Length: 78
View (cartoon, rainbow, N blue to C red):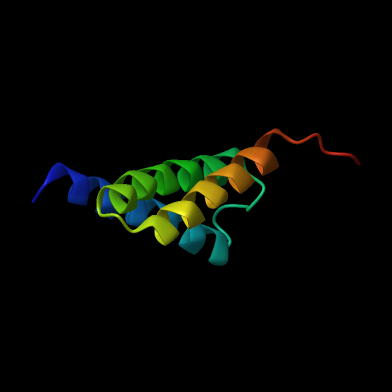
């Protein structure tokens, strides 16, 4: 299996794992691990989809990374 496909599968697994952990109450959506799993997974998917010329999917993942980074670093008011 080409490395680019391994990167894509890893990215898919990380994003789905983060989502499942959140859905089952094991990880909060506002937690650093959740953000990092989403950023890492989407970054892997960007590499894979761009390589395979799936530009719409690559763009979705770029936006996903941007949103996760913004949510992670934004100031939180109480």
